[in-house]
Amino acid sequence: MTEPPDGAHGSDGDGDGDRGDNPSPEHVPDDSGADTGPPSADPGDGAQSRYRPTAQQWGVAAAIVAFGVGFCLYRLIKGVGLGQSAALYIGIPLVLAVVLTLGSPARRPAGMAMKVTTILLLLSVPVLGEGACCVLMAAPIFYLFVYLGARVSVSARDAKRRGPAVFVGPALLALLALEGTAPVLTVPGNATSSATRIIDLPAAQMPAALAAPLRLEATRPDGLLAIGFPRPVADSGGLGLGQRRTITFAGAHHRSGPVSAHHWGEQSSALHLVVDERTRTSVTFRRVADTSPLATWLRWDEMRVRWRAVDATHTEVRWELGYTRLLSPSWYFGSIERLVTWRAADYLIRTIELEDVSVTPPAAGATDTHAHR
Image (tube, rainbow, N blue to C red; front, top):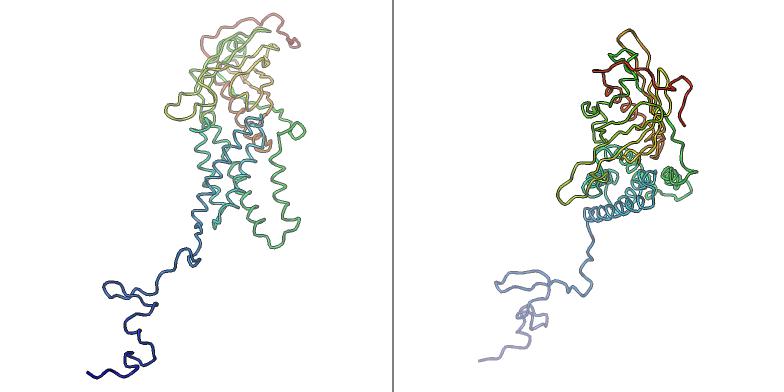
């Protein structure tokens, strides 16, 4: 057999005699003969791209951090005795907004912050032992400052020029969060609320009606007072000058399961009053002690009941509640407490005993100028 001439081993005559047997490294066939394309790069050779979390993953991480920061701040602020200040009701929402805005690349950080705040408020009932009325009162101001904090944080983050003007918004919000944290930063909270009703009772029988126990158990609170405020259940004491009067409040309902007990406690509490002044048409009670949950929101100063005859069978009764607001900020909780105490004064008038009341002479010393001190 004649030996093929030199160079006849290649099929394209380019001098590479092994190309017909060894495929190009750019096209590696598998066992079935299919072309699998170029070989994958070695993970260790730097060709593989570095892993980066998605926007959704960043959002979840920021939400988890916000949960932790929020609960830790709550415990800290309560622990140092600032639970009634704006540091709780404004400071925590602002911190949540900053954490969520700067820690997540969400397109709408304000919306995400509102969602996380909603979850935190709902969790505060089973985890922190808060009551329904506390959460309902705190929710509007929480939402307001979470939104404002998110907007200000986005503006500061995306500002093209970082001048002093960028810090004006954050500084103003921080100042609002300081109200109530020190005596010099606390707005005076003295206030008086009153309600007036005409009842079916002669004016001469009013002293006897007020001397009898108020019908607290039979008259259930309604409207705003029925959303979870402490409920008075019993009244005892007299109406003589210097006599004690005690209003007993029911304890919180028992919470079963793996949830925190209500921070009010399940034991009953009481508001202790003393008859401080007595006239023919009025009586004034002064607070002696208050162990009810209301003592964390306001401090009762005095309660005054005045009455005047409308006709032979009807009397106009005016119940005044003097108190000192303890919650900050004043511009928010001042209005809420005025509304609640107004409803409370109206409720107390409705609890006056109107049946089985006999006329009794005024107590000794019950003149228009006598006061007990």
